[in-house]
Image (cartoon, rainbow, N blue to C red; front, side, top):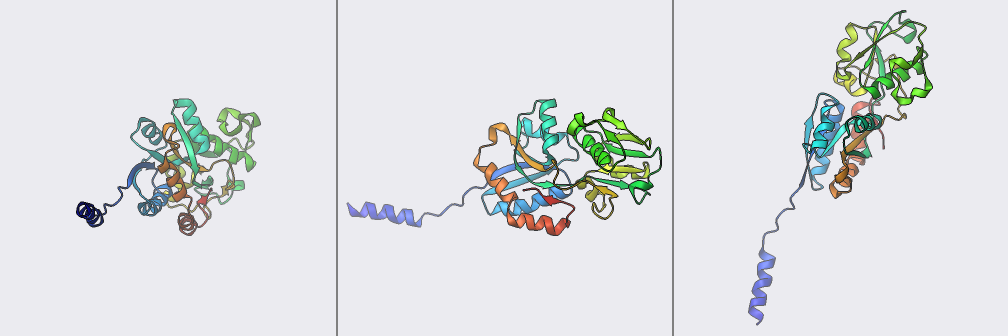
Length: 260
């Protein structure tokens, strides 16, 4: 009776230990800092049972549609007000599960060295999406170039401009195209990730910059149905870890700010 038991024990001891299969997560990002940071997260995740497939998108629209349809498992490219607006306008069943970084919006000029040097009738390009466009207008208002109806809140549009003493001409363009527009306008309000991607220094080159502690912290988003899954908590924890924070602070030197 003992021999079969011993043989079974020996077989159990000698059986090969199979590696735990890493859980695959498809995550969408935009090029530049979001992609660079996620590559660091990917390396950290590899040792913790997560295999990240990082997919880059060149605009702000497709990553949420791809996530909602199931082509992605998560995305990391947008701030909370933008996600809220997309959910309201498009009916996406998405939710933010953790904060990532903040890219303070900056005003960049082709010739002027300061806001005061902008001429009357200057053309100012701003993002054409509702949340980032409003963000740009609020920065212009904060700097005293225009007045904006306070009732508009974060969703201010050009129709909410109440004062415009310099008769500035507001030009609305796709956010990703704003760096290229600098040769055609007097100034442009450019998101930090697109500024960095275009070779601009958000700290040295901007003639005005919003504070880093505003309401525009970027987030990791997932489908509502997935928000309580273990891999989601693990992904957020890895992103919000000390090695990733150190990388952000070292690589971007204040142009990108950890938001957690």
